[in-house]
Length: 147
Image (cartoon, rainbow, N blue to C red; front, side, top):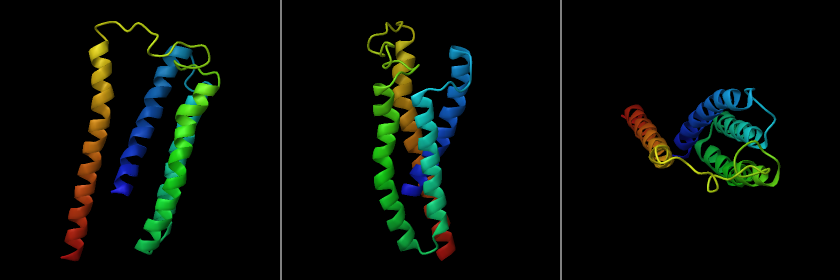
């Protein structure tokens, strides 16, 4: 389940970076301004790509699971720091830091509010659904190999 969660997360990381670059180009005039949140997202993506490389480098399944779990235990708190703590402590183009108003301070139009909340609930649900589908496909493939 862990590997499928990471595979799904990597897909969403790439989608987030790609669409974020489009948004940044429209909003700030360049696709990759020097911003701590953007750089943290790129580093987090690289960390989980390294997780996939580490996991695929080991042949023995038990050893792979243990070493990957230890890597994940250390990687997750670093990602929290990269994505949530450092951008709040430094100047950023994103809302909520560096003198920019946070989302709670912004007056969101009543037309946009349902879309925003639907996205905040919907995207994690879609990610969980994709992860569960990938996991079930992996189980079926494993079952076919053992049969």
